[in-house]
Length: 295
Ligand SMILES: [Ca+2]
Ligand SMILES: [Ca+2]
Image (spheres, helix red, strand yellow):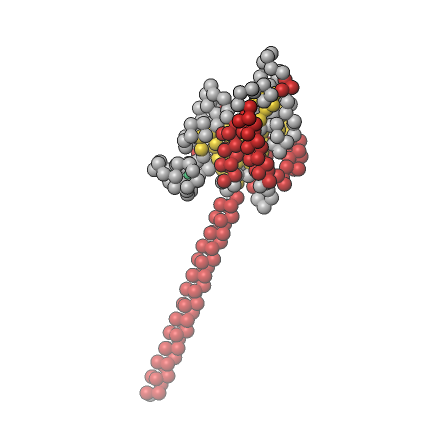
């Protein structure tokens, strides 16, 4: 009798141990599953994050910060509006970009040009961020040094493409005063452009047209940054009444202006990069003509 009770107890105990072990297995399995889901989520987010970090710098009049909010670049190392250059890059509160004309962090658009250009670049895309760099101001000329600094700024954030939907017309030979200073500025701009290209960045510019001036000889004029061979110059098949001195790399059919044609090309290149993030933009240029033919 005692032996029976003892055996029954032992059996009950071993049943409990078995159940406990099974429970433990299920708990470990469930925990493993949760961990696996958690890790795959992190991996997915990481990949998505990598994809969304294709940065396109738009050097222009700024952009509409509200309308283009989803595409706006965020400098996560910079705390906004504390009057401190948190990331120590030389620019105070540059959360979204920089305004070289006024030397502040206001990259809002005053003319609508930069906004329109950006809208064309981001059309039907969700994996790019726009870094607005403002160098244009109402009724004021564009300074070459601002373009140079804008390129260096775009490089510091690893932008893949820099869009220039403008051109600066310069009568270099006619410049008697400050000729040396101008030459230095042009050389610095060229150095920045060469460095950007060497880093695999695409430099996409709009074909610039000459402003008619009877007192200037066309042969003495140059437009920047289009004058440099490292820069892609994009035109449109819509006729223009003006002359252009620029070399022409690609033509976009039915683009309303060369500004928007350049934006279209930047958008196509951005698309190619998002599909092939291991390539540099420069490596993807050979595929551009085929894409433009499909338009
Ligand atoms: Ca800063
Ligand atoms: Ca700050």
